[in-house]
Length: 460
Image 1: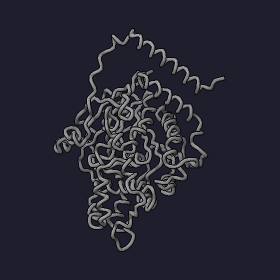
Image 2: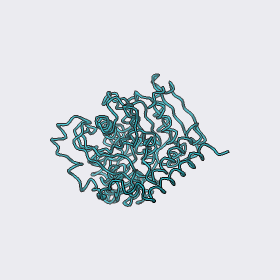
Image 3: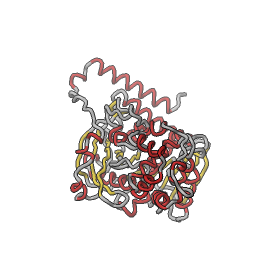
Image 4: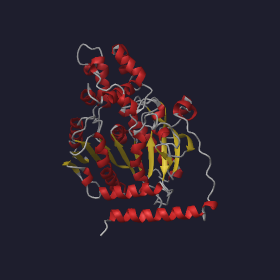
């Protein structure tokens, strides 16, 4: 007897082959509307008119209000177009000092009808880079060169957004690092994320109105934006109907991550976060300008224009703290300590249910920091939180095995099923064994497989 998983794939393959046969025979191809020639997208550095609207226009716009819109084509790794409707919106947000800044997000609507309002998932992809051409809004576009230029994480993680689209949900993907590519600046990323949801729910063609149920999803660098957005929701954008937040490989404490990476393989990636933080915290930038040794300043100049692949690969095993001249531990110096304190999660308890997961053997972001964050949240008796430590993974594998479980959990929240009360903390051999996760993954992969042959994603 064939399993339901195999049956789905066989049925789908049969449908795809039949559709391909019809198209090859030409019975409908002649009637299909002509596809406009592809447009080469411009990276933000060469497209200031959209990415950097005049400061007075931004300041006169309400947070989350749309300044400009354009339709775009999204694709897998810049090469294979995906049959969905997609737009970029330029909108106003605020930085961590509540000063007006421009922001950009990609809005994506699957084919097919959905009950109004359409459910919405805000997906914070791990940009983890320090240049505009690495941003999701550019990297996700058809014919973007970002995947070839080192931005491999955003298009890879985009498969999780496509799993949401295959459910019929709308998706918003914010450029949560902002116009200066301030990697790891969590309070900034949280505001941009929430204002991106405001923009998405006000954009009628997306079919997710102001009362649409909204979920948050983010892993690793995306968890920083997701976690801070969840904490800021009640004070910054309480009108948004956020029904759940899922975050994994959590960047809860950047100071702890820096100490863990010092002299280790991952130090190149964490140094990129140091660069990003200088762009949002002027006192920290001034401190490093005075204290970095010549090697550190040279690395800062060389690494600043790079995407995540090269940020990670360039000069690992760095003595990060040793490059900073200090009379003691540089993490204790006031400008550094203040920045670490402001970006540490746990400033407030999110007012929506939470799904948190982390590899027990994570080599990039320390498990202890996430344990401490969960303990902080769970001191509040009103917290609803499910936390899983995965023991058969490291940082990257943990998203592969935990992402489907997180999306399955978010599906229940978006469907209006109440989350369990209180805190549930568990250790799993592998989250791939979460009930229903493999079926969810199978359905998502089947829909994605069909889209490679021209079938609309999320069509019902």
